[in-house]
Length: 502
Image 1: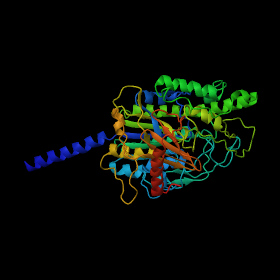
Image 2: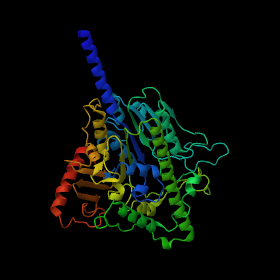
Image 3: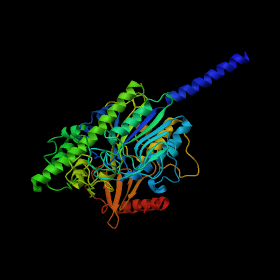
Image 4: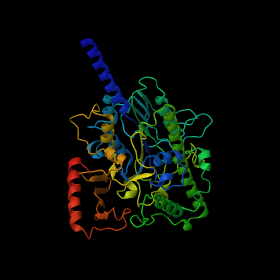
């Protein structure tokens, strides 16, 4: 009798363990690089992104999701749940999400861009394939031409890691294209048979559409003629689509003033070149979406899509940068291995519609990201749901820990998590955040407290906006609410002292 009772108890315990494991969703975190707020079709863009649009339709689009306005700082906050000021570029004094989820039984994978000096394989990831730098030649990230091919137009030779193997320089074969390869590695891990029933966490960290502008010729050709009418045409047509989609309201979010050159004053050659820049940028986003489609197909084939939380977002606003780099063959065709081009400020302003400014700036165009959450088993909301709850990169580690369960361990002896779980938004609820959101990178700093945002470029006056009534920051209220400015400035300064923001 006792033996039978013991057997039943063991079976019950196994059943509980199995039930818990089955409840843990897989997690796929997809990060694009320097993409515009309105680039995706589901955020008003004309770029063909049917796969991300599908996720948005059947999931949640967020209109007030925030990043840190810069590549490497975003990755720190995203992967640690902390403001990046609490750490450094090597994630010192933190726990990475891989280290936190592994005790809960997760397989942990990271593919693509890192932008730090250490190998993620040594910090809680079962697999890492990618590069440790910030930008690469998409066709050939090595330091010399491959046989029968032009010299790489830009040689940013970073260390690449494939699990515990470090390679520098890394010169792959001629069929290499970074966006495709980053996806290939991820798909390969999904096919692994060992521990195939365990949940997984995949960080798919694309470098697209960061400069240099490199894309497949057939993808570039898809956008022939699309950008010949210039910056303001694209900015306005995207804005009108955003209004029709319900992302914004014209009264609350008027289109911000243009911050680009006037198209009519460009020469015919300049217009042709500017249109081509944006055409290649669009092709890079298009190719990324194609590869996300491959991932979705694989998840469906493995019958894992239903219980996989997929989150897509961008590391900062579109980049205004147009850096000058020495190229070995200045006449190389744009988009090819021998070229180096970037979109620049005018296009960055256009594709961040409806916001002002761009990457590294504290205005909404620098820190607000499109964000999609898709999880059929966990999000039970009507199609085309839009969430207006403000959320931040620091919220993802707390969210993933809640999904993973009590076995997800956050170490003691390091800073406490700064963020909160966003799971309430999956059931249509607002987030109840007790602390403001804080921002600081370079010369820009800001604080978001409920609907109020106080933002400043150092050595210039603070600007105050009521984002419930002025989502695109067109009316400064600092003079009208001077006491609120003082209180919020005091809060920001207290936070800055605590975390070491400078």
